[in-house]
Each structure stands twice: as structure tokens, then as C-alpha cells.
Length: 112
Image (cartoon, rainbow, N blue to C red):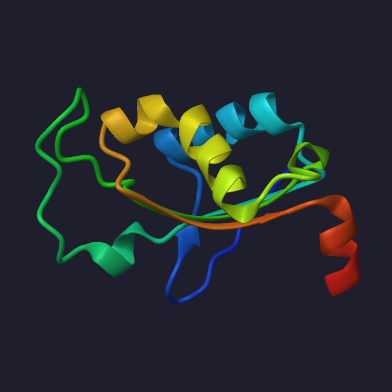
């Protein structure tokens, strides 16, 4: 289940794209933990996206913490590729950047 945080530098990830991102990641990875934060406001100075069906989209930057058994035995680079592949539609329609923290359940438990 996605956790939504609201701090001075991030906004709750509750927009349309955030819901699609959450749904896509949940379907692809069956996560034990999924935390999505919308950091788009930190990047408001960027030039608006002019490509894709959602030109000028405001939900463009997310921070994602994802814990899944599917990452077991997978390198950090390949974990990132897996996530990017699962969100290819979003990148084609205005999503600009993800800050990813991708862990196995064992890696996550070791940090607790």
C-alpha cells in the first residue's frame, strides 16, 4: 500500500499521474512497501514539458521507495531499469524524473 507524505518540500502524491504510477508499480512488483512522494514543486522552475499527450503536465518528479521480492538477485541498475520499463507510458506522457530507492524485503529489514 502506498504511503503518502506531506512535508514542506514534497506534496502528497494524490494526483492522477501519481495514482497511475502507484497502480503500475503495484501491478508489476507486488510491493511489500510503496511510498510515493510528488516532488514536482521543487522543479517548478523547469521548462514545462511540451511533448506527449499531457503536454505541460505538473506531476513530473516523484520520489519512490519500493520494496519487493522481485528485486532479489537483481543489481541496482537493473532494478531501476525494471521500474522505468514499467512506467514507460508515463515517461512518454510528461513524467520527467524519478528518485528511486529500491530494496528487497531483507535489505529493508536490515535498515529498520
